Image (cartoon, rainbow, N blue to C red; front, side):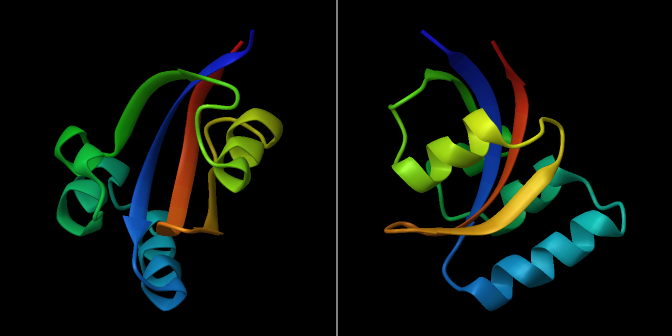
Amino acid sequence: MSTACARHILLKTEAEAKKIKQQLAQGKDFGQLAKRHSSCPSAKKGGNLGEFRRGQMVKAFDDVVFKKPILTVHGPVKTKFGYHLIETIYRD
């Protein structure tokens, strides 16, 4: 079964997510922005969700992690939790 490791920043609005994505594009540190802005408990770990299997996350999140290029920030991705900026660190 496929596994991956990803980190994310969870935000309430698409506008917030776009603003943070712009800061990332300007070279700001993902982990620091996650700690400061993410509403997910993973914020304490710089947004790192650790390793998980395909199907453990909601579909829209899973699709990005398992289908999009790694080490690239994707999003905003809308789920029932809010808007995510997602970076897949590795997957097998």
